[in-house]
Image 1 (cartoon, helix red, strand yellow):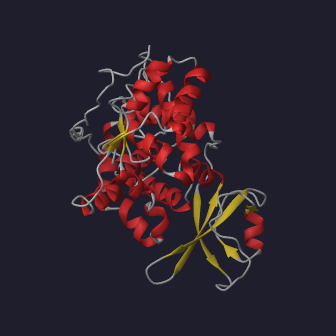
Image 2 (cartoon, rainbow, N blue to C red):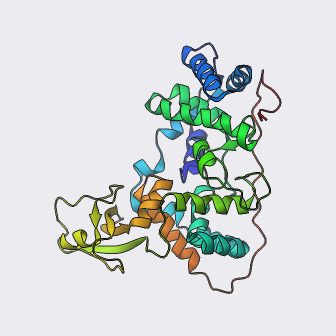
Image 3 (tube, rainbow, N blue to C red):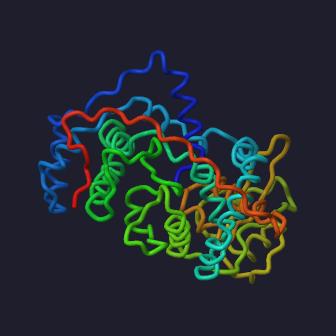
Length: 358
């Protein structure tokens, strides 16, 4: 819900490490914090003392505000954005990941209709196949954005509430769970609300673990797409050209399906597609290094944008999936890649040793 963010956040943190303001414990006496604790406890029948202890253990981190203010999707043109996610290493590791998890990916693809290579591409973009799942405590990220980032405070307060509910429902320890600067978790980088809504117990062991359990991770990503309307067997995107490169009034990069295959062709967009003229479509215009390029996204392209609201993200996922699928069919399964050790936990004063509510 959030790709390339770890690299960008790490760079920003490194540049400002010498002068960055210190993290501060969240002040429970702030009126908006006290109101949040009261409302969440009452609305969800949670013990108020427990909610207060957990929220009081959060630290607000200025580096998180800096990171979220400049996500990669807002400042990079397509040719630079693509270069981040379509590297030789990411493609090669994606093919190795697919070979290692072939049986699982193909089983889930057969049952859900979501291609295994697309599932692999999503976790490849989000966390480099589960190896970079985040260095921020999720509690700190969400609390910082909930109370110190006014542009989206309401959204992140909602996600902070969902995190507390995950403790009760899924046994997630809110004092130790690590994720992105925006609070996204695990290999697929689900926000807490998405975790509660879309995560699935793929191996039916009675618990859902999106950090370490690949059957859960793969099943959950597939379910996210199915719930968003994925259509089995339909194409995602097609290359396009314009009969008139200076055509005016042709909306580009809108994340809705306001056009159709036929309407785009009638307006001078040329592309190949097996879909009927009435099939929904959207037009994508991109900045390359030397000239613009164009694509037409179909319904399944739009579905990918439900995972991350960015046309460039959806296109990167589609292109990475195609590159992974181009691997030789008899590629041997490699040894699993080493998972990076988790970063050290920050101290959590005045809080219980664990914050799983059972």
